[in-house]
Image (cartoon, rainbow, N blue to C red; front, side, top):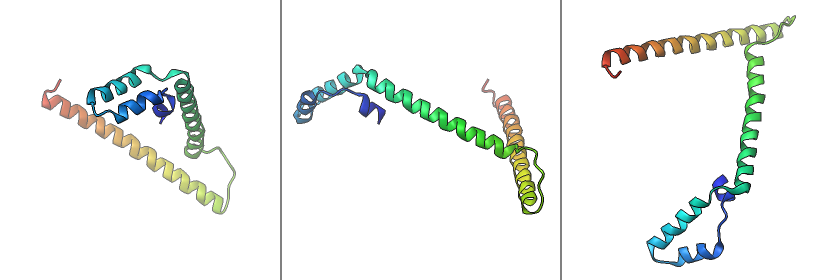
Length: 118
């Protein structure tokens, strides 16, 4: 979509390429369009997209860190049960990811060593 918005299309050349039955003229039109590049409008759209993606990542990253490592709180009742459940969940997730990482690295090294692909 960024490419579509960023390219500068000459409508007359596009009409000629669409009407033409010659494949070479259609290919020439596409090649010329690709050579033009993004232009300023495309670069601005790309920068805005990257900035938006990066800000969403930062916002969600902070929420994820607060979920995994909640602050110290004095809790009782249902809140304490929910806190303990969350702590067990994050502990299980960290163990699964950690053990999975170790197993996959060891398996990769074993396969790499015995297949002779090094």
